[in-house]
Image 1 (cartoon, one colour):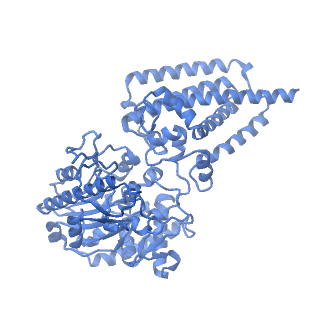
Image 2 (tube, one colour):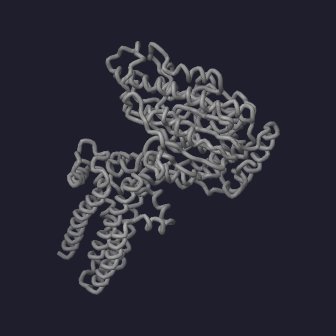
Image 3 (spheres, helix red, strand yellow):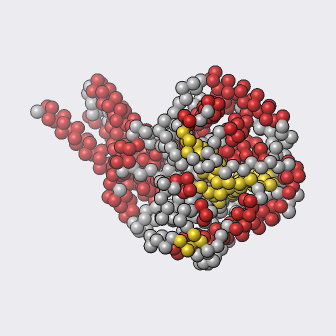
Length: 635
């Protein structure tokens, strides 16, 4: 009878915790949806309170994961405090804090709470300064009331739950063991299980993830575990050897290069959203070339096919590679969004931005996606100009009924920011004109083939019209740059295909489906100041763009970019769309043939091994290299 009562008591507590967890989850979701009740909710409608219920009912599986975590947290508090009222009070306060924090963060930056958000705790004073004074007063009041209630609870011993310390210790250990997998939700060991349970991670946008999967799961999704396979030879001594090796290599390279740095010059990286050449698309025949100007530009400067890691998406992953020089395939397949998952590892020293005095990013859209604000802060970006930044972009016109700001406007924003001062300047432009939906009304380019009824001809022809506008705007942009007395180098590339060519088999035609155009161009002033070298690669990995750009301009390199130069010149391009659980990298030769890492020559394998060691040290390892002169601004 005594055992049955204990079982009944245990079940009764769990029943209470279940309903409280559902209530707490509902409240947190209200905070997440409060800034915009329709954001990422699909057809749920605009009623905030109903949408909160819709999440609990419609998203039963993902909501269930959130509820399980909350129940286990309640048990932990109960085991430690030994008072259920303490659990209810603390969880109520915690729920209120999380709900408020979610609403404040989303309202200010359109980002939900992620692991990266906790970096801001170090700037607590600044965060408090951003809050409304009424909210601060309410928070202090809640804190005082909570302390008072806890004081009362601890003087009511009849609310004690456990009498046995041993039983509490056992339950504590069991609860921790049950919680641990949730903190490795995106690890290879548990990811498949949580996907089956209903977690469809959307790490490209933390707010969308929080709406779709719940705020708690979104936070857990943002955590990164085991980003890379640890190289067997990784150690401090190994990294010292790499520093020495590539310091020597940098000296050898720099003997043949006359330019020390980009003083008085500007380098522009332009990511052209969803852009590929129609001729790259198997089976597509168009009555005219919408990218005729860009084709001509590519014929007259260093250019080729960029191998994208994305198809129909993955913009920020490609951007990450261009700025850091790191390769996406070197990470485990669970790393789908480095900006969100590897935020803390991104820094100014080990990116191209570390080579410049002034650096800005221009994005003709809102600036919240992909955790860019936090990432750019780590990169030392001086200003991130968007439509919702403190000082927003100046030119915002669209073209021909397009849904997004035109490339012509985007280029105008870049031209307005090119420095007239003495320092070196880096500008990154992320365009939006050709992002879906494609709503251009013009139809100057018509599809001849295929005639497959599965293809949405109207959408494809609208997309082709957008390419034409990009083509014209890019030619005009280069003409304007060429008139400047300031030396300017432009790295320009399409990030990935749009996902509209349904007739293409992306498995058998994988290389085509991941090929986009790129070119590296200098204005006349840059050619005069730096000289020029043809650095064309038929197939290029975006992580090699900086080494290519520096080689074109005869710029001296630090040990890191010396390593990247060696890879560029001696190893085939990385096959970006192929991922391997063991961290093996595939390559593409000049004929488009895939090559396994094990098929490389011994010298090539040594270079790849060194590169993996460097990438591991910076993103997952102990950052030995950051304490050396491996990364340094060339002076």
